[in-house]
Amino acid sequence: MDSRLFDRWLNEINSHLNRLTKEVKELRQFQASVEYEKQVQAALELMGRMQASHASYTNLIIVAGYAAFFTFWSTLKNDLPKWLYAVSGLLIVLSLLVFIAWEVTKMIWGAFHLRKAEYQLTSRSPGPDIAIRSHL
Image (tube, rainbow, N blue to C red):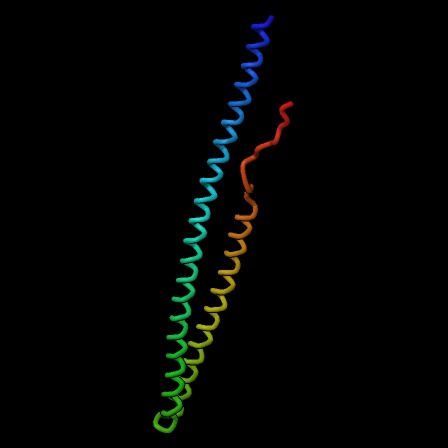
């Protein structure tokens, strides 16, 4: 009788150790995934800042080009035929409208995909499913 009690006690301890080992393994996997997600987040932030600075620089160059064109165009008012002056003005205004429409489209597209990514990140489970059990 004493041997059966001892075997039962050993089996119970063994099952508790196996459960705890499994939970520790899940916690290690969770910790590894959190570390990986932190690295991915840092890389995304860095790429986002770099992309924003490149986009700002590109937009600055484009706006400077438009400003230079309008300055040069206004000085040619008396030297160009009226039809050519009007057509060139119309084309550059059309170009400016397309540029503005493209920037607005990029902004809307970026906001849409950012919301989609935020939703995917927030809908994930925050960690391993470990139930706290009482061992009395």
